[in-house]
Amino acid sequence: MQDALCYSTTKRAILAEKEASRTPIKIARFTRTADHTKLVVNDITHVTAPNSLECPFQFCQNLDNQATTTLEKLDEAPEDKLEIFCKVLKLSETKVVGRAKYNVANATIADNTGQITLDVWNNLIPQIQENKVYKFTNLSVRFWNGVRKLKTTTNSVVLETPNPLLEGLEVEDTSSPYQETTILLS
Image 1: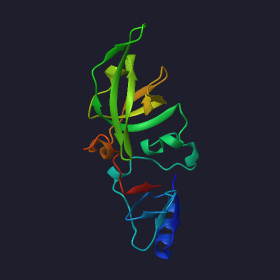
Image 2 (image 1 turned 60 degrees about the horizontal axis):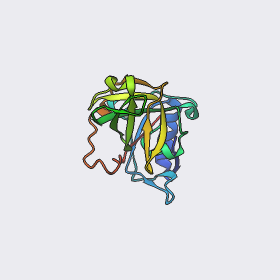
Image 3 (image 1 turned 90 degrees about the horizontal axis):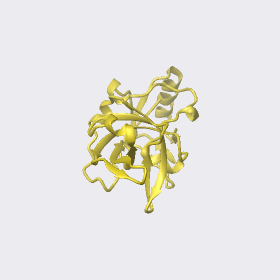
Image 4 (image 1 turned 90 degrees about the vertical axis):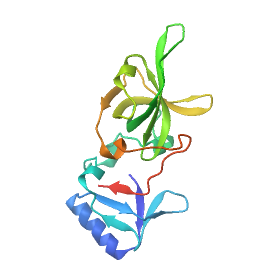
């Protein structure tokens, strides 16, 4: 959920109509407040209807119950039981680690807000491939050598989830997050 300030009476009427009909909207050419906590909608902001490929979610009455986390919001997310929709950009070779001989592979994953490394453990490794989109559930946040990462757990589930928005995602510089300037709201 994203708070917004609407300074345009025209846009306010459009937003109210779309909210009443539970119709998704696409917002482009917006700005943010100085503290980046709110969107600012004004007369130059574009408010349009997205096409079906741009709207991969369903209306949810109580957005506080939505469990999906975007990569840019990891700081605000709980440290475990995360649900993330993302594209696997790279997948390393499997390594055997520890005395118990656990298998681990490092995946670089990305969504429209950023990218991060995901440690994939044991039986989940064969379930993922590069350039495919997945829904990962029950992931945990961890820090290793001062770097934030995600990791699968014994309760993690991987489900291949076709999503045209993420399938076309390409991140050129893997050291910096990919930022999108369009937001979809329902």
